[in-house]
Length: 124
Image 1 (tube, helix red, strand yellow):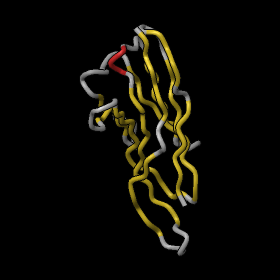
Image 2: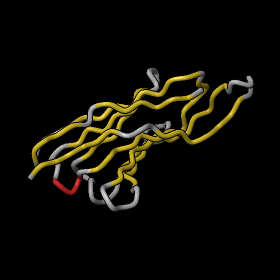
Image 3: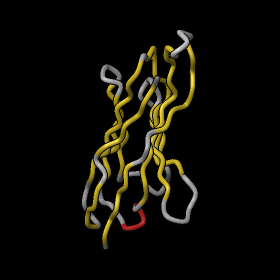
Image 4: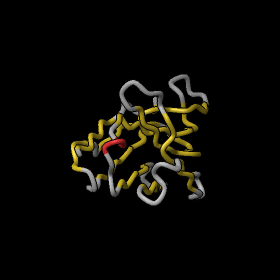
């Protein structure tokens, strides 16, 4: 049906940069808000950033000025550019999208979809 696949995670030293990508695939009619969330060991999943279909963005205070979310509507992709990374940014990062799509029963459906997560590790 609909699948989100993240890429771009890895190990980086503090102060470094990484760029995460998320590709949305399936029989998609439209994508509303897209976002990135993260979950550190022993902690709850938290919002990192969101971007609306029109390009309006929202960031967690902890990443403002360091992370930038963007999207390519033509390719059904979203990105998270992460600069000035800190050890406390270490987490599994998940992409998220609100998708209207054609289901396997040939019905138009709308739901929130999550990727499988990609690990970002920032060493001190």
